[in-house]
Image (cartoon, rainbow, N blue to C red; front, side):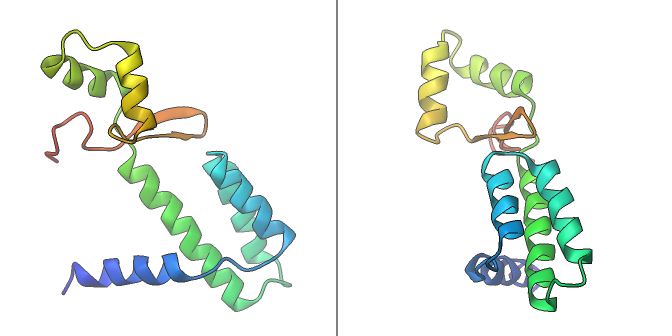
Length: 127
């Protein structure tokens, strides 16, 4: 049951539409651009704004939690991931790495200007 509750919370969040508004659009633009720190600042400003409805504040709190979770999941440094890959593919080329990134075989995100790899990318799936 402990594992189900977080999954349900995430599912509810993902199904919740973000509220309309210029501030929310700016937040989403920052997130899409990988500017999580800037998005957090905008979220925090919007939450404390007296004009923000409780429902919008709740949605934004959930969005901020999602950003935190993504950063926890995408925390593997490039050198660790490349060392792992080269153990199994010693002659890997930059073109192959780029292809794996493009087709999502190698999960990577740019967060606050830094490429960050999925936490298990450099461990073979072990935590």
